[in-house]
Amino acid sequence: MRMGIAILAALALVSCKKTGENEYEVVRPGLVTDTVKTPDVNVGTRTDSVTVPTVGSTKDTIIVNKPTVGSKKAAVKTPTVDVKRP
Image 1 (tube, one colour):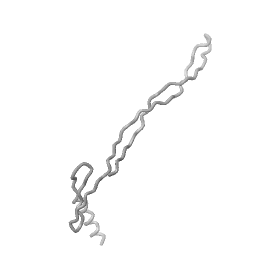
Image 2: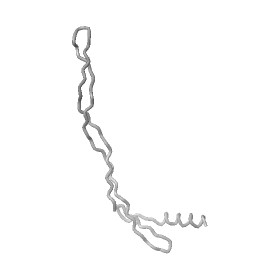
Image 3: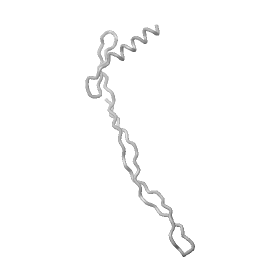
Image 4: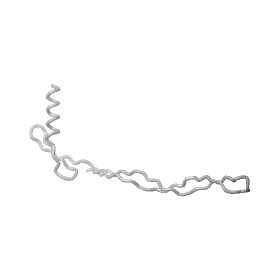
């Protein structure tokens, strides 16, 4: 029984062909043909700006450096995914 299921699964995989953009034609047992549409997935990146702290030192006197804390803007890239279902 398991061998028959494995053969049918192998035939189902072999009998697929691409018919267009995101479309596949599948021939099932009994010569039934179905068209399957896969989702369209677009992956990219988006750049955001965030404020990050900066730490440095400035001369206060000849001997001692006075610590300073500030902030600056930095660019951060985050991934984006857009899925369009059929």
